[in-house]
Length: 301
Ligand SMILES: Nc1ccc(F)c(C(=O)c2c[nH]c3ncc(Cl)cc23)c1F
Ligand SMILES: [Fe+3]
Image 1: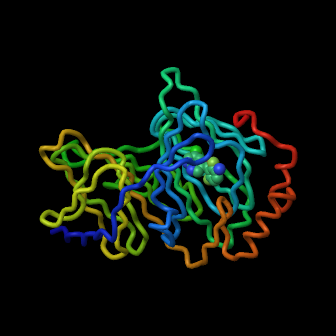
Image 2 (image 1 turned 30 degrees about the vertical axis):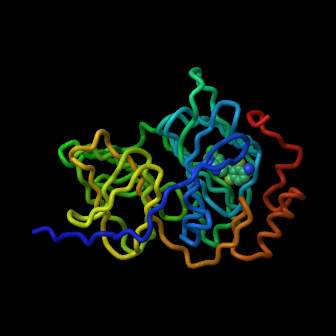
Image 3 (image 1 turned 90 degrees about the horizontal axis):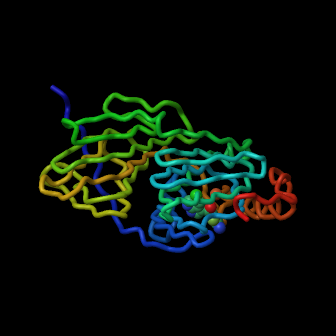
């Protein structure tokens, strides 16, 4: 007999509200707002929609990792070390800013003028890695294992972590994070184990999902962030038999880091002095920001 997995209960669920960011971009920020801070290791979650001509021109980062997951369109990136590339639909970029990165992230011009849509998650770096060399890990859509379950009513893209016996291809961030892109069709249901004790949330991208065990389900509409309690072994999700469309959500879990978070915009360290130092280093092109001296991106002009 298989022992039933204890459900992760919902701590809170709330609608992510659109706001402006960068140059003309719109983001639904659901982590990193007064509603949800101190949710280690997660610092920010932006569900972005970037129309042509808008974007995120030259800006710095220090002390965190950013995970950018493109759903629609494309994003070009270019940094002060000459790294550049394009993310297309279904691709991800894991960027470890470490001691310092200055880059631009600009949308590609889609011929039909459609927006470029995706999510960007910021994950805190363990204190001892805050000064590490920056690095990139690209994960292309075709590299991501996809597993079907519940008679084809459930599809999981295993970006990072494990689902239904399928492992993701490689560890991409220093801070252990699971990232699963889950689609549940009407009448489908899924029980997804998560590492015990990790902080976990689900962000709903489309449709309405019922979270919880049979008899204790809570409907969650799109663009909501569902934060789970720490206890429990698995997330239970389902979609009503009579629903018009599937539900799609990203399910994310990460190890809480036992360290302070002191953040000033894109500078995330563990003390006020270090944040002040980051600001000074950025202004004076030192301690990791040397290559910012005289640098401007091509794509962010
Ligand atoms: N000015 C400013 C200050 C700080 C930032 F982090 C940014 C920034 O780059 C982004 C914030 N949300 C995002 N979602 C997706 C993408 Cl691709 C980029 C961003 C930015 F533009
Ligand atoms: Fe950035």
